[in-house]
Image (cartoon, rainbow, N blue to C red; front, side):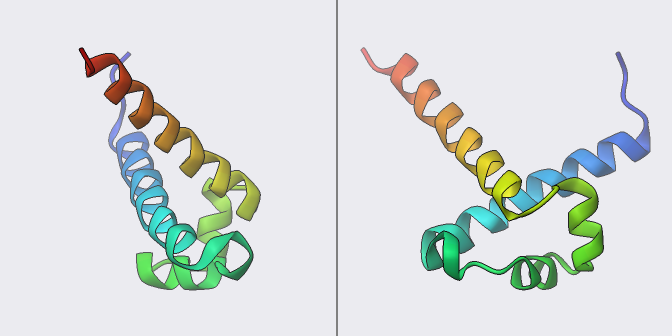
Length: 79
């Protein structure tokens, strides 16, 4: 099914949030990562971030899922 412009924009925002969050979680750890810092870097309000992710835990789990997908892809490429 073809996605409309709003859905595509939402997917792009989610991908950007995951990429930036991944760096924050990697550099600062889970407990020292703040959603405020992530939202500021993405240039959105914390409320807008909550529109896409229920809380920090769900954002972290999305980052973890992305990392696991990348690992699986690399394993599949291995001889």
